[in-house]
Length: 170
Image (cartoon, rainbow, N blue to C red; front, top):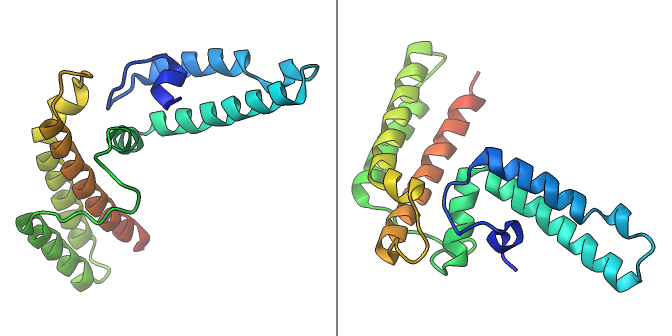
């Protein structure tokens, strides 16, 4: 059973967090191991597995990037540890930001410029996939659209790594 089936929601790329929380608490109560202490060991083990899967699914669905990753994997469009070839123009922009990052020495203005560049790139890469992510419909959204989302996912990961480097600088 996949996470969407577990939560009885349609496959999607962006989850309504408010509805998710209430559904999670409802399912957690229903499948809480404490309610099954008098059951046979097989039933207890089954409930423990469902409870663990609920926790993993909830954690995944709370993070839009993880939800995108999970959905793409579910659709067979993303493999674990996949090496994805990003477009050269994007890589050149990232290289430029990385060079600025390497040249920056305790320069608050430099950090702000890089922060701004990352923010602008994040907006630019999200814009073409915004509707696909927010309006995804099983059976209607095409594989071609999902491949655009896959490229967005990998671009965003690149930018997040740069952001983490920047945040690590004091």
